[in-house]
Length: 154
Image 1: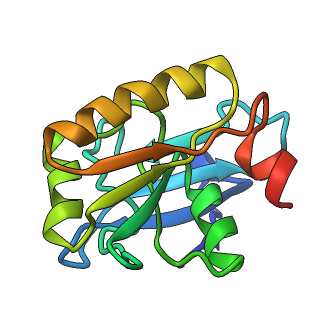
Image 2: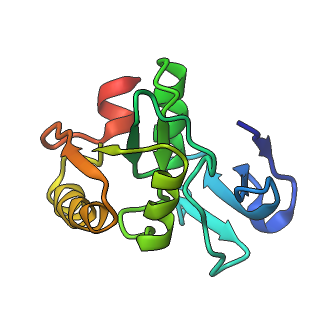
């Protein structure tokens, strides 16, 4: 994973992650606040960029990928050895095309691992339905009332 701390005034004090498409071309930057009080927590540049799943080239293990909400969730799980993890940059940033790309890249099964709050679990149900439309089997991994990154894996 590539990351740097921005010195650009608009993104000062943020960790910047280049987001690459399947060809390796940088299509956006995900800029995350270093401080928990800095608002907004995430800034994407350019605004309105079409974000691929991240990383754009997943590594399915036995046909399975783990789909999480954010880039820090991916990094955290990769650090734990789960190299088949990808994120969708939020609970609504996926579509049939992105999910179909998982199939093309060898995924047959998606483990949905969103936050355990109501919003995360409702989004997981919606995602499961969309996955099934493109022929991906799913399973929801739910840790009730838990933020994946901060409360479970750190």
